[in-house]
Image 1 (cartoon, rainbow, N blue to C red):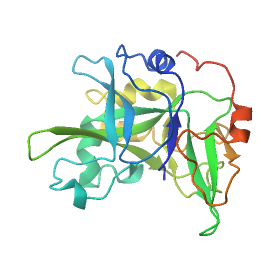
Image 2 (image 1 turned 60 degrees about the vertical axis):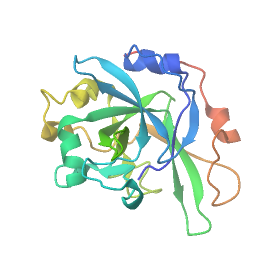
Image 3 (image 1 turned 90 degrees about the vertical axis):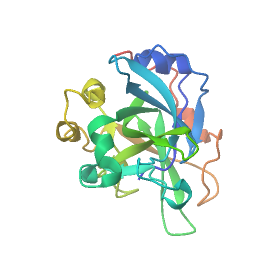
Length: 232
């Protein structure tokens, strides 16, 4: 599961890394939560990468009332082609969701401790995502997205039985290409990240407390590198 993540890389570096020309007014953010606006990279009709803001929590086209529908902020990769909520998006609307790291909690109820997981060395990456545009009865449209999950790698397994799908940069083009790359072919990219990709940083503070938006742990800050993300 992935229910909190951050995107703290400056917008101009995110734009350079993912290769879109849009210049959105989207500041760096920590501890992003479901139902909040998130940064999404997709392909437009001309095959160009574009930036979009979307609600984190997929709303399939058949939803009548979002208030009575569960918040689909994650989608199990193994179920993309069998679940009606995800099947159409897996075939036609795949996206990248930029991130710098994500949070997981472990421990008994009431004593859960947060960990921050990020690449080592730190760098920008992308979750595999799906998106849908949901039509409101009043005529408006809400763009929504979800993050795919898979079995955990060796780093995440002690903390949770699922992890977000982190795409390798050389898979970005194929993941986004829904014209020439089938959903079945795309699913082959959704396995666990390499065991040595991530480090898990325990966050200090009150046991069981969730990190607040904008808050950075001393240990997490101390390990941050000043280098810019690689341009691929």
